[in-house]
Every structure is written in structure tokens, then in C-alpha cells.
Image (cartoon, rainbow, N blue to C red; front, side, top):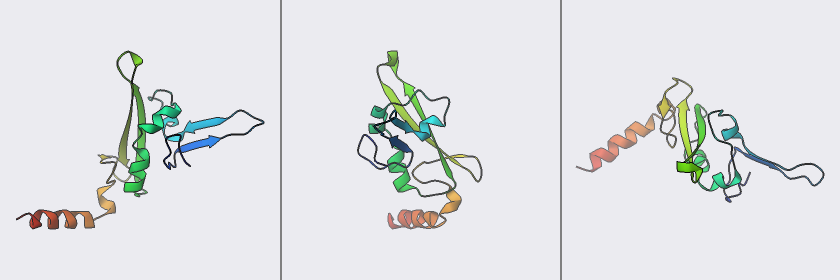
Length: 115
């Protein structure tokens, strides 16, 4: 679904119905009780849509945390990725290392090309 920031995000949900109250939520922020309450403005700073485009690993779970800055004037949106296979934190843009063994071969080829 398209976010208020104009990007496609699978975690954003909106239901605008003229007969009932409107619902707008980020399901990724809703899953994390340690996160501040989500506001539609947070979508502009959220890296989750870019992470979903870069990483299609089904074994990577994203955890979104919204934190208030100094005196509550600013807000930060942080996304961590956890590999469900081994429970370790991984790079959100790459995902679980076991999901793409060709990445190591590509890195070795790039390093060898620098010589």
C-alpha cells in the first residue's frame, strides 16, 4: 500500500471509510511495544520500504523502533533485521547470510578485481 510519503510499503495499512472511523497504521511499529506511537509523518523517514526492495529474504524479520529525540522535538525511525534461522542481527539490506551464497563469490571477485 502507498504510504503518506508516497512509497510502497507492505507494513503500512490504511482504511478510509466514510461511514466509520478511518484507520491508518504501521504494522511494523505496532508489533514492537518498545516503540513510540506511530504517526503518518514517520513514513517519510522510514527505511523499511527501501529494505523490502533490497532484501526479499523470507527468513529476515524486521523490527522497527521509533524513538523521540531531545525534548521530544525530533523523532528517529530505526530498523533492525534479525535472521530467523540463527537469531542473529544482520544487515537489513542484505538479510540472512545463508540465503544467498553467491554474495560471497561476488565479494571475492570484486576484491580480486581491485588488484
